[in-house]
Every structure is written in structure tokens, then in C-alpha cells.
Length: 345
Image (cartoon, rainbow, N blue to C red; front, side, top):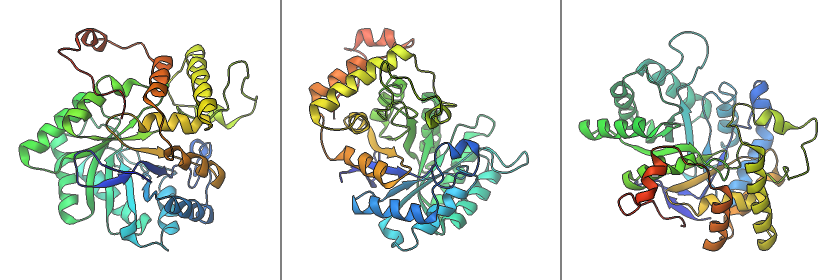
């Protein structure tokens, strides 16, 4: 397994990370993702470790702490120093007006809860799960800096921030000498390339590593969707896509057609090609994969075992090229003044 720098930090992470949102299935939303129990989780984690993937991502709100609990139990047979754990806080956890957000009060409660559920003394990468516009950035960042100084957190990261949210946060950390965001967990896929407009150039310039979530486009790039082959009336894909971005049918089919062509050419599966396309993109430190069972996990792990050519990536780029929003379409007309990051890694 290839290991990459997490942004401009000294931490190296595997090119693939195992996401544990499928652990627990604590409510209807997360049951659509999966209902993995401790025994199954232990088997999947061991498969990852055998493949060289030692990076595991969770969050406090995944099944209201159940994902963290199951992950914590499933790693007890492994040396803690052999693992990299990632978790998140910000969203509503329990009742009450203060049980949400990135305030000092809520984050202090949540870091202690996550450490207890994970049965560990520290978290390697701790994310703000979303931007909190009601809490001063200084309050959030000083709290996170304190966690690092106390040894409860090794590196801090953002998730789902806009460019100006992240840039202002970096400026505040630089001003006060506080710990800086090292990574940004982002939605990025062949059918969701908005990350490339502003966040990728920013990450390229500022040394922020991208940790990619939902790399298969909310389940749309698993190979189950084909032009002229509608989904079955009853399918987990219907619920799994709830809350995700709207994707026009013709655009999706165009991308899927290109994926199938490259998959046939390479002898790989559609999801393997879709994941490998992401691994070829600049600023991507790790791609977060999920799996309901060992078969799915083995297939996804194999996505890092080959390298698409620059020509194959260019074909997928062309098929998935989105309509770019303003001011980015204007800036791209003057690339001598606004150069883009490299298109191939």
C-alpha cells in the first residue's frame, strides 16, 4: 500500500482509508449504509491491516456513537501505535442547545466521549465535521490547539468547509501560532468535481491534504447503474443516495459509460477504476472507502493495486467535465495568470 504525506504535515497515511459509517446501523439513515457488528468489524479491520491500510475513519454522530464504540472494540487486539484513527465532531449529539456546534463546551464534551468510546488516549486526526458559523473561529481553533497540546489529538482537520472558511481558519492559526488544519475531508468523485474549482487550488497552495469521502458518488459508481438498466424497485441505493447531490441522468450515464470502457480495457471493476481516478489527482492524501462485507472490501482495496495511465484519466476527465460556476469559468480562460494544479499525479 502506498503511503502519502497528509498535506504538508509529517504524518504519512495510506492512499486508502477505511470508513466505518457502516458500523452499527443505529437509525434508519445509517442502516441504509450498513449494520456491521463487532465480529464483522473485526474481520474487516484485519483485512485492511493485511492490505496495509491502517487508517480508520469514524465520527461521533455515526449512529450516535455506536460506530466509534464498535470500532473501539474491534481494534483492541491490535497495538494502538500500529493504527491511525480519525473522528469528527460538530453536529448534534443528543438533546439540548449546547450539544451541537464547534464551541469549546461541545468540543470538550465530544473529544472525551470519542476517546472513551474508541478506548484510546488520543485521536490521530480530529475533524470539525462541518462549519459552525455561530461560534467564533478563534474559540474553535484555540480549543483544538489545546487538545493537541494535551496530547488528546495529533492533527486537526476540517470537513465540508468552503474555501473562505478554511482560509480564514488558517490565517487565524498562523496569527496566534496555533495548530493548523492539516487536512480537509471533502466530497469528491467522478460525478462530483466541485472540489476542483477552489478547494483543490487552495489545498495545493496551502499544503492541505484531501481526505475524500463518498468517492463512488453516493453509491452511483458501484457498477450497478447502467444506461438502459434501471435500478430494481427495491434497492438500498434509493435510500443510500438520500441527502446527496442531485445528478442528472444523462450526465451520470455518460460518466458510467466511460468508466465501463476503461474497466473493460484494464480488466478492473467499475468502482476500482473510479477510485483509482481519484488516486491520480493532486492534493488527494487518502480516499475513504466503505464496505458492507469482506467481498466489497477486497474489491475496493484492490483499487490501489494498479495505476491508470494519464490518457485513461484524461478520457474520464473529459466524460465527467462539469459546467463550472462563476468566477471559475472566467478565471480558467486566463490560465497564464491562474494556473490550475496538475491534472495527473
